[in-house]
Image 1: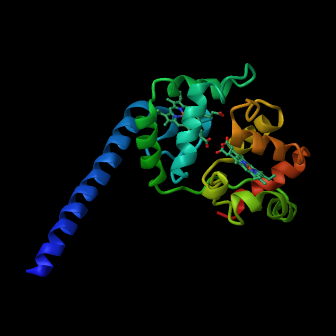
Image 2 (image 1 turned 45 degrees about the vertical axis):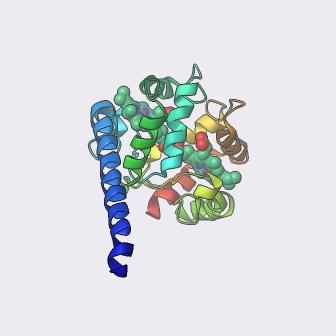
Image 3 (image 1 turned 60 degrees about the vertical axis):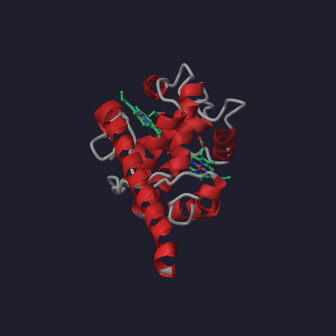
Length: 207
Ligand code: HEC
Ligand code: HEC
């Protein structure tokens, strides 16, 4: 009897939470399939022809923050940022709840390894492990505690463009963009284009 009394609420809680989780994933998926799939791909694997990055497997908090940044004019606002502005247009209609649902759904999707690119991997490794790995992790898997995104799954052209954006003040320049500003500051310590290419080739090679 005692066992039944104890187990019933646990069972109900598990059922309710279980079905909520499924529903949230489904709503996130529906939102994604309607509003995002055309550019970011069926499995959120990205589309390099459209400059749209992979979103699969990224930390939910990071994805939600970027969607908010686009909406609030912290990202994709610079007049030089034609590509970011394309994305910003699709973030304007999203509210907090849809951002959370989309980001949660995307974070659960399996990541795909991007196309490898040529580069000096030894040089890239040394530089990455000395200057980037402390925040983005030794395996480039990111660090949520440091608000540093997962860099795996992202293609070379997207990684390079974002890096240049930070370096040129196109991204991470707004006073309210706390985390973007951190990355912009870091980028100012590495400007040499060959080393940037080597670091990116290395990031892609370790996935
Ligand atoms: C018209 C094509 C298009 C549509 C539709 C679109 N995006 Fe994008 N998205 C892009 C492009 C292009 C970029 C890269 C922008 C840049 O370089 O700053 C991007 C960037 C992003 C980023 C930043 C990723 C990162 O790693 O920082 C997120 C998050 C994102 N999109 C989510 C979404 C979601 C969610 C939807 C649907 C509500 C959506 N996008 C709809 C084209 C699109
Ligand atoms: C002090 C911690 C820190 C270090 C060190 C650091 N980053 Fe970052 N990086 C961040 C944060 C935080 C963000 C997220 C910024 C935002 O929210 O817009 C970021 C974002 C990025 C992005 C954008 C990813 C995306 O999906 O759009 C790239 C690319 C990147 N970093 C590359 C690098 C490289 C390459 C290095 C080494 C040269 C490096 N980072 C070193 C903290 C760091």
